[in-house]
Length: 318
Length: 247
Image 1 (cartoon, one colour):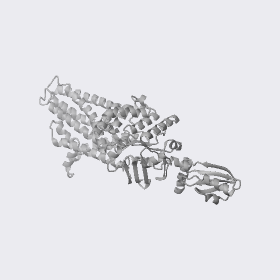
Image 2: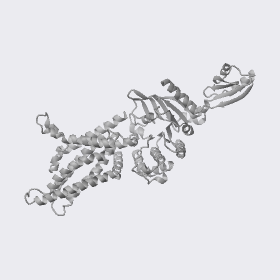
Image 3: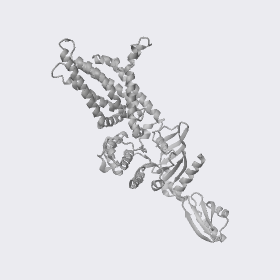
Image 4: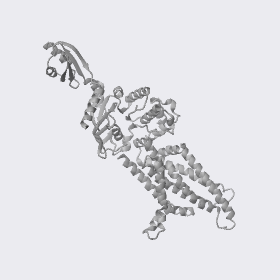
């Protein structure tokens, strides 16, 4: 864990959700979800389709009242003081909430007014939001005549025009072409410098590319919530020996969670969280004369974690 | 308050950016103009026989009386989009996530719709104005008639907004609010049947009966209050409906 992470750990809490639950009749879409978001974080909300990502975001933005639980934004309760709480949020839903018959400028000006940007700062807010989202050249065009990618950008511009502390983006790159996806990704990374961002997606590389922290949601509960750097730490080590020991000997070593043979004297050793057992393996191999011939760390990718966590879920449901 | 005006301004702009508003205004103006000229010719022919009927009676009485039917047909078309279309395209999320209350959203839409109603009133006012150079008009009477039309349309609009908040499909909202308005309009039919208990109450509830006195040039506070209460009721129901949606 680096200095930066330590800094984020102690930073101001911007969004906090406790025991968030949402029922649609008998089905429970989101169950007892806890979430804490600190200043300067970009958090990726991952999950299979229908896991409850959008429902969670709707509850965080006050579009949907939770069946149980509480959301506070900058310490302001969304239930008790919705107006004050909502003024700190910018939200891009799955469908960009645009009016096709207005021009980009008209639309963004309306959004700025709606979010209470004072008249004097309106021009500046408009210019900077358009600049950030690459909309400077299309200000006088009708939103309805823009391509899907540009409409998506207008949606993002709408979410950041009042410079909220928290920006919540629901699948911001869905339906875009690869170049547009890259542009939006750059934009999100840029936003992360000044705002706190929650981003949902089911595209893993996207989350890996821009987020500081990953939350995986499956069947309405959080099943994984770690900094993205933890996916690097949660590694396993592959080692090979000329005179292989029993797997239990390896498993007893410091920092080792378990070991399983791969055949030909090779083992896959899973490490304890944030531990690197390679030193211990080398030392043990030297003392016990195992004849170490291969040793390398194998990183557990986000995809493996995702598949592991969400597929057990499917099995449990079956 | 500034939120209401901001929403209203954009709503008003969007109404007049759509060809629907212009088509509706054109059709209304054509039909009302046609009826106006017909009534005027009738009056000119019959004026010598019944000298106690003035030209203001023709305009404010007959013409505006006829217009109510036309407005009953067009107002559902103008209010159908207000919430249903926003829900269909998802743009309602913008309003729901913004720091504005549901009351402000509903009032904003309503005031936006009032902008269209003003345009209709101006067009209606042009007819008697066209006669002003040639004859003496009873402006008080005409103002009462226009006020009546305004209040009636305001009531139509609030009921239309409520029905629009119930559905995702603008066409269903139009049919629904037309049906609702017609039922409230025709509720006075019941009042003519003496065997029904409280039949007078039904007459009092009817949308059109309160227009009668204004049409005749009588300004009665009770009638004005009826339309204001009617509108407030439906706007309040809309707020409740939107709140239910979040839960």
